[in-house]
Image 1 (cartoon, rainbow, N blue to C red):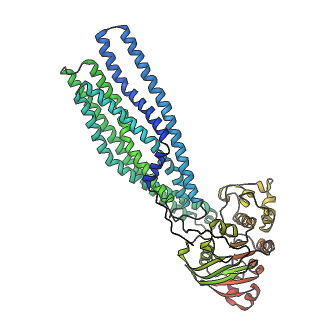
Image 2: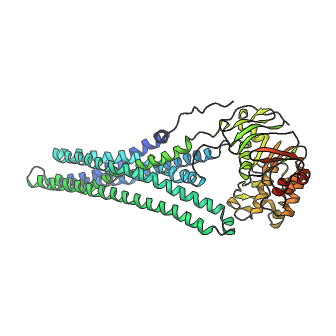
Image 3: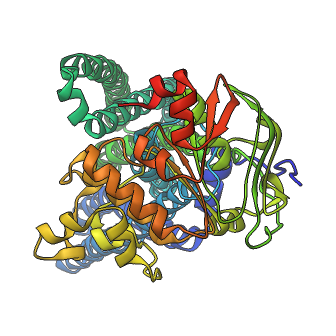
Length: 566
């Protein structure tokens, strides 16, 4: 029995809070060390001012030596605190990005697919770029705090010299942050749109690479290229927009920081000229006005990176909060049971009803390819239970009441476009390394010529998506994997569309022999596979319109003969 998904959604703010919470130790140490770095940087002009003041007043070598020693301590503190602080923060950043990449990948590898309108290329972008940018929050917060420390130290030091200088720094910093916060929001929205468009372009490339050979076959490569150029141009234009906003932000931050530094310098000069501060305090103020530019730059850039991290977290939330397309049950089917389709209505299927007895080999000749695809999707549990009417029963249990693990162990639905992974022939046929029927599966699928063609045999390297294999070889490799799984119920969807007629005949006989005594359903229009089946069901307009052996249907049904005869 299915139950609604009651998990609490995880929006972008929750993702960021999770990242901050589980890295709080590294962030505390990083903040302390980076705070020491910024305090040391700010202390340098303060020390110079004090050195000038005391040297001019005391004019002693001892005071000068002590001052030089103090500068050495400050420089050492600055160097070591930056080195170890950034090491801690970058390690935490890299580790956190890895965690989110794994989490996004785990969502894509769940037995039940997620109900998210994203292509594989888009999810790849989320698992890489967005995961990295979300993890940047680990560095952003300590740098933001440490930059604030520098600004506060500078304001206090200047305030001790003259309260007006301290207030000028505080008021100026607040004004700068107010102006830049408006631009940072624009950066966040623009960056999110750019990442979405780049992801769509990546998905388009993945689709084109997958279908490159068929595209060349019917001359569609030029149209495909124009399609990709369109989405790539959209991504480029959005990237230009983001660059403009970033440029405006950086320019505004630099200009405002320079104005503040200039205002501090001019005010200090006026106060010194008026005799309200001494020469040492003037040197300190001028030095702080120059040194404060760097922490002010960091401090003013942090809101931008926070918005970018939030935008990336929102895109990750699309995947992480997406509910499964169906909520599986917990029951297990009885061994050796029937496969029953009882009045199923879904898309092109209309009150579809048939039963496949245990150990029977049944072929389904679907006159409409869409109906074949819809039936395969329902049997593979890729369709939510509430999306179709009727019932699918495996071993007497409704499909929706069975656990995903039980369904996968009992019934395998092999799609016509089975994915091929980078690795070897062996790892593609037997990913878990536990199958005892690999040789028989290789022979039945007629993959023996591919194995014999290479010196490494089953250990021959296969590229991603089977790029170094032909279409027929990829299809036979997928079929071998399905046969090696040796499930009690095997459903094959168009397993021989890319092989020649002679090979197809041999595969049909081999599959029937290997699967004898185990339930097998083949959705196909192949005469060879239809001929070896115990019986053939004709699926037309979503219902079974005829049922007999292949040869009897050829003799008695003109429409069937026209549909399957080659």
